Length: 81
Image 1 (cartoon, helix red, strand yellow):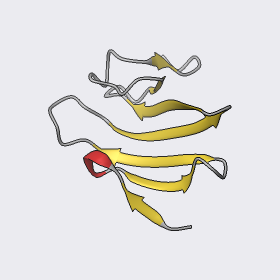
Image 2: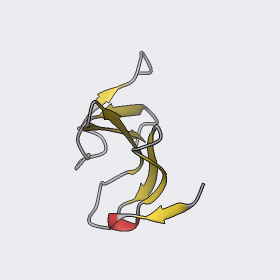
Image 3: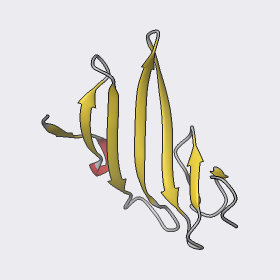
């Protein structure tokens, strides 16, 4: 499977026509922005986005929107804190 370069330097693997896309990125747009995994799935023609990242305390977080603050956005996964 070939990788493609998406926006903001994100590297994408896969296609929405097969099963989904996995992307990895490290943002350079500002401070307090995490490197993250971007998971995209096709649900009956609608693309659904999920973002996973580790905050500064080491907790894994998840969100369906691009995080703008690595420590305040998203939801902590499980009972890590």
